[in-house]
Amino acid sequence: MNAVKVDDASRVRLPSLHPGDYYEPEFRGEDEVVLRKVIPPRRRMTQAEALEAIRRSPLKFTKSWDEIKKETR
Image (cartoon, rainbow, N blue to C red):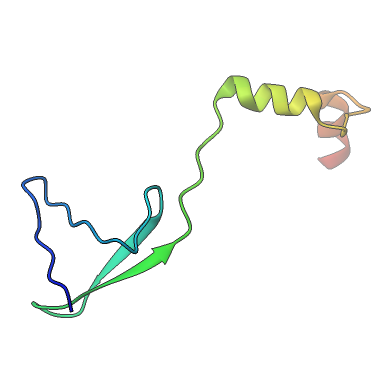
């Protein structure tokens, strides 16, 4: 087994890990850490991106908001 050293910024470089991947550490004791690969968190849309996605959507409302409120109340 090859030993690795933690640098001043608390980083460990392992050749099998790739930049951009996300890993969750699991501490099994004082001397053991297991890294599990996890799905990266999704970036939230900005307001402009959300409005553009709504504009491009094939789904369109056929009634006004007030008409919809009357039907559901």
